[in-house]
Length: 185
Image (cartoon, rainbow, N blue to C red; front, top):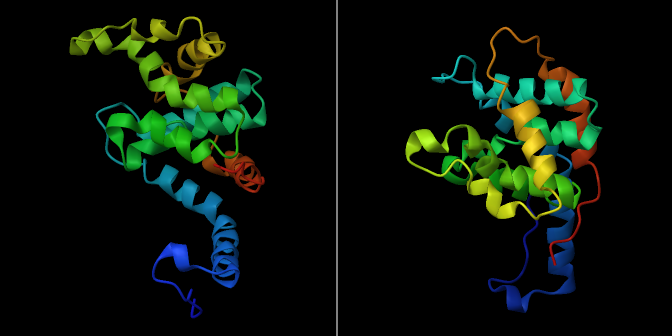
């Protein structure tokens, strides 16, 4: 891009400057789904699990689809671990932040909290409280998140499970990120 804004401090920007930035952001948003799919492919690497995290993501989404989940929820199941690429310690929150402008509050909450809910299956092996998720017991999305983990996330490390390929899910990912994002302000 050869055109640049005139300011060096945001406070001195003009409408023309910000129009240029909005135009650039709109162009980049059209490429966002492909970047997200790339992050997902980056999970296809060596792992101590019996399958890669990429295969785990495909398997989780396949289980969600076979269980009758709607398209948005299936995409959330597919992308729930993409935060592992840049922030393994808080991958749930990172994935939720990526999805937040495009998904329902319910699905956002599930993705954001799936890490602590998944801890039910392993926290006690690391000296933690496997029931840590219970602090959310009264939240309206508690049962949905517990279901997400029990039915789709935690059983999806099976090398023998017949999983749909990424090409099966990619159109849904592109459709989700083609939505007008909710503003953050």
